[in-house]
Image (cartoon, rainbow, N blue to C red):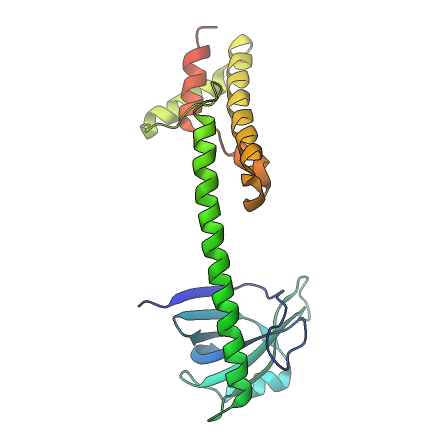
Length: 225
């Protein structure tokens, strides 16, 4: 099985491991790659790549580690000198010894956290699919909604160009049709509660609802105005 790759941009996660502060996170696994400012840690079927700066002592210990070593790495966040935003900070790292109780406990906690995250992702995906189906069913009943259809790229570009050339009554007509289409999407989203699982909510979905099909419909309906 191909390992899952995860890039950690910034850690603002509560610790679930023994010996870690509430603003720190512990990773236990084998080093896949390592450099002074980046490390890849593999565990089970996942590899986490983390860019960071760190305490001098932590970086000294890091220098003695190699790919293949099993390690316990503790990360927090901080703002290095000259930077304007916080990034990951390596607080501590060490090689796991044989029968290492702390590594075993933290590794088990990490596995439990990963399993919980996976269940949450599966639940979110299932809810998203259910929401999408419900929205589709509601939109098909709304006369203001324009269902998506396959469109030739050149034709779509031509329609967008024609829409942009509209003025006066043509522009007002087209804008009314497109606004009605977006409102239909927004209303269906709100009615089905789909905005709770989308960054930006239903307004975000409605904002991106101007499909080629909707634009083509508006142009064809309004070009004779």
